[in-house]
Image (cartoon, rainbow, N blue to C red; front, side, top):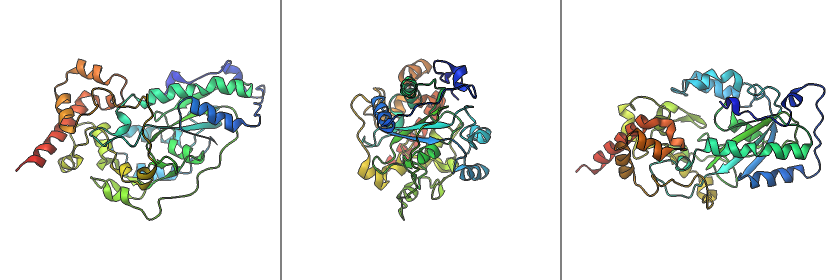
Length: 341
């Protein structure tokens, strides 16, 4: 949750007051200027949608009822707020939804590509805030807004589909027809009416099942249904305690996260991009160039001070030192089995 990080415009009380709020003036060319502002802030995709009941909410609740969220109880606790995208931030009516590429052409390795650099939550939240003064100047009204980046009770992929950014792949990722799926999603919800983009209604997965077939732990119970109890990303990041014995060997050399279902996707094979020079998501020095065995050994040798220094500002802190060291042991067990005569 963003808590006090919610944004206010020049006059929050006026922005939320009913009846005496000036109407925004949307001039011709707004969409083009919005796209330019998004690119200037470092985003690669942008769309606008109105807020309301997510089309995927029934699917989400059935997923929860099946227990596929595993130990992520916070998802169930926030389910009621997720039932209507207007609820998390009262007064919000529309959302600017963005995508930010983190690079899908970098070599595979023991850490999923998204987590090798700076924490995307902080990077994107700060950049989303950059829309607020621009919107106020553009529309001529105070704007009350709040950024969400995988940190609040919003179904962000649903918002992204509504804003025209892509479709839900069979691996549950949002896929854009020009960029694949190696990008982060974020949304800035606002209390002003904006011109909306058409939703993305096509499904370009066709009969392809490469992502489902390639999953090392067979975590997909069907197209677009992921059982987190078996997902390597969940097991190495969110899961607390030891990884079940029958899954340990299947984790292989994934020390944090997993990219398999994205790596095999034809849309990524064709359209994934190289992270731009100076990207905040480029691998930090502690991770760069290390194979699974070397990285696992280095992590097992860490104390708390070394851990904090190496992972300051990193999304990998989500697993904490205990989780990373557990994962390191699993990786080294795999290497021992693999290299045994």
